[in-house]
Amino acid sequence: MAKPRDVKIVLGSYDATPHPYHHQYLGDVSEWIISDLNPRVPSIEKIDARDIKYKNVSALYASHILEHIKEDEILSTLTHWRKVLKKGGWVHINVPDITFGLDMLMELNTGKLPDNPYFNNREKVMQIINGTMESDFDTHKSWFTKDKLEDYLQKAGFKNYKVWQEYEAHDMRCILARAEK
Image (cartoon, rainbow, N blue to C red; front, top):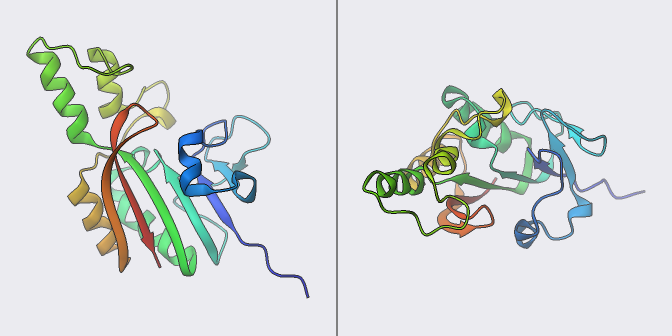
């Protein structure tokens, strides 16, 4: 009898496989279903992160997607993720750190230019807070601090989780979390 497929899903990948920085968490990307709510290329599967149809998922990878979900849907989304995971399955979350964006905005307001290769003017810094706002898919609808994400994970029923801050591939400080079912 064939071994059942190990289902691993990258949520919200836009139109490409994850940035090489993220491979440290993913391993072999070819083992993952690459998905997005609004796929722009045929190789990406259409999956709504708020309503994943797969069951017994071994891993979910959600980098820069949770902030695009409405605040009043965050808890139900995280609870849904926990439910679709198999025992021992895990989710890795990466969201912008709103305090980083606000700190950079305050620096700009005092006349200091941020020492950042990308977020070095008001328009770019506002993307940390609001997203690019080029479409509904590119607009931030929720904001996160480390404590807020920890609180949501606990309320969603995750018992084993770690939340930390890290300066990562998007040239900004983010909040990362790994939670197991």
